[in-house]
Length: 203
Image (cartoon, rainbow, N blue to C red):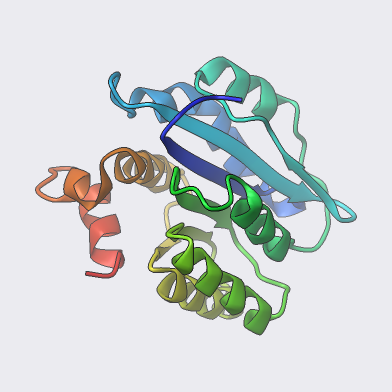
């Protein structure tokens, strides 16, 4: 397992409607690691769900090659959301350690109990693992759920409105800057995505 002090869990909805997002992730596998400075130990784990209760989590990765291999091995498949499973897994990884700095989730729907997800979001806050929730689409129910989870975890909820994926690309880079350098890495930045993420995080 990778020996890293700064870890990010990168979780994606891989149900049928999410294929465009996977294309974006594949296209920026190198950039996700380039953002992490050379002197900072950084590791990423990819998690996804799809189909009939299928959930997968990769080993921790410190190089872009294995991430691309993992992304290329996934195809989207219809099914219900499994955000609860993502959160329970994320809380169990390195339990008691502060090495996991954030949990990123990208999706467009929430078909689960808000009460259950909110309770897990509180556990994420207690574990100092803020949720960075990037929402695609404009589903009002999902927006309410994601906003509540973000607030309870001391994280951030950003609703994406850019079909090209450029905003998601930049926000993922900002998330890694946050994981590696904390709020200080976002403060005073000239990147609009850094300013946006900082504005969404609790002061």
